Amino acid sequence: MTDLRSDEEIMLAYADGADGEFRLLFKRYSPILFRLLVRQVGRPADAQDLVQQTFLQLHHARRDFRRDTRLRPWILTIALNLARDLLRRRGRRPETVVDEQALPVSAAIQPTVEGWNDVGKRVRSALSELPHDQRQVIELHWFDELSFNEIASIIGATSGAARVRAHRGYAALRKTLDPGAAGAPS
Image 1: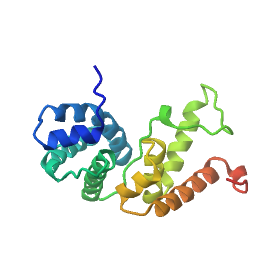
Image 2 (image 1 turned 90 degrees about the vertical axis):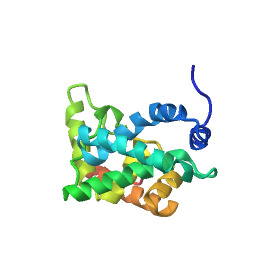
Image 3 (image 1 turned 180 degrees about the vertical axis):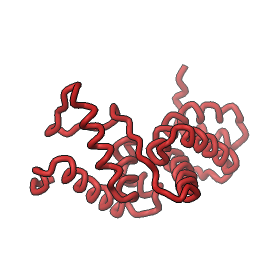
Image 4 (image 1 turned 60 degrees about the horizontal axis):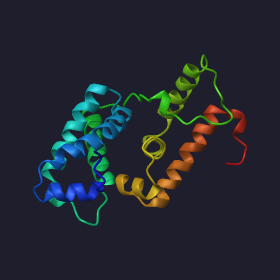
């Protein structure tokens, strides 16, 4: 049976002492966090560790969760902060690992089955060449389907700044992936 309560209702119940709600939050969010963190840190084992750390921090901060807060941006912020800390400790930028099946394909690029690997490699390469702030916004927008308001909350910027980063990143991707479209209107 599917629980129809919102994430926020479940989190508030957990914060109020309903320990069983933690399991439901973990079930809902661990796959989302894992996909996000693999893209950020590049290594599945590191991403799995970060998922565990995210839920540990969620547990410790559960009573700080405010009733007027959305859970998804809150938990994604925790996860991305942990990923940033890991990358800082590593002392280098992550290797971007992207699930080829999750990538939206432009109508201008319709690969054959044989050509899919080449397109996936080109997209992964182009995405990894973007500045971190642009890549992060595009990943949150494309892969996690977050609104720019949610993204802004996660990255600590205004919605307008998130949109600008996305626009610049999308323009750079378009230029890299389809050099003939560089002068085409967006």
